[in-house]
Length: 173
Image (cartoon, one colour):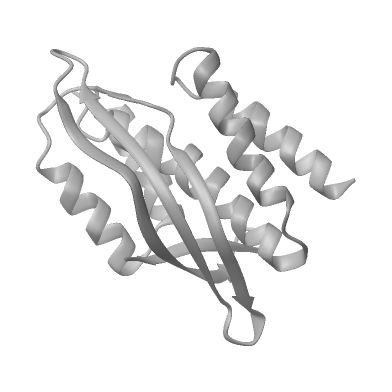
């Protein structure tokens, strides 16, 4: 029941993202389905990365980090800071820092989760993924960032949240 509730919640939240039409919905569903094959902490880590860190923090950051609306830019930066720590945050901020000012169009990212392992004794988890991302400027549609099936090794750290714990991205390779 927990997996179904989480998948429904994550799908609903992801569908609220400003990403586009039917193709975006299918990608989110496929990605979340990939997480459903895991159990226990591995499942928790997978959905934390795909849902909270990628779809609900990184996608809006890519879209609005350089927005001319300062309130929007601050809001997405704060959300990113809550889900990406240390080297991972510096990598992403450095990438976006070189992008032109203004709003961007972000295609729904595609994920293949290759493996997930977690170590609660050290509050750490590792995901191996293949990811496809595309970010274009809204003004002229020029591609400013693109990955196609790029392999990543994502290190996540279990930290204290407001009520319980949460998983955050601490390194991306």
